[in-house]
Amino acid sequence: MKVASFAIDHDRLERGIYVSRKDKVGGETVTTFDIRIKKPNREPCMDTAAIHTLEHLMAVYLRGNEEWAEKTVYVGPMGCRTGMYIIFKGDLYPEDIAGVMKDTFKYIMDFKGDIPAATSKECGNYLDHNLEYAKWECAKFYNEILTDLKKENMNYPE
Image 1 (cartoon, helix red, strand yellow):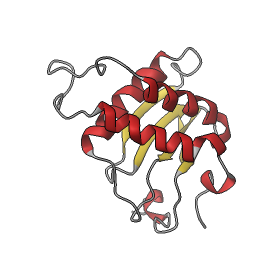
Image 2 (tube, one colour):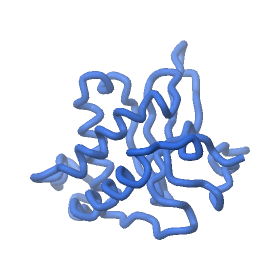
Image 3 (spheres, one colour):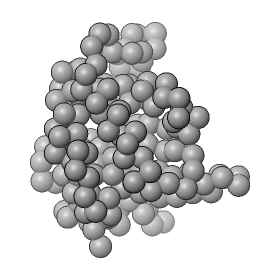
Image 4 (cartoon, helix red, strand yellow):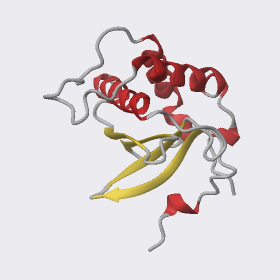
């Protein structure tokens, strides 16, 4: 069985926002986005505690966002720890979510307080979080990629 995401040339893949796939669920299209925060195989992947915190904060922000709450299906880390997958309802493109991604990363960069749902009752690995490192990763991605999102950061390498 061919897995589409394994066909991407990860040695040439840059950081950015990519459409990973589009699927039909019932009569509706859902779009899976590859939010690639790190260059695969060319820079260290994210620490598990940082990406875990990133997952919690992204999910809380998107599911609490008036415009995007009903469109947000899934937020989760990639196994390789170089980015996040986000599934939204709709036939969408990177340009459609660039604004909310900026807002999401800004929210995380500025976040203060307790990490949402980071208790033993709410989380399966509640001790594995790192807010400061998650904020650092977000600031790097926001400042270097999201503030000036280019075509090469929205189209998979051919």
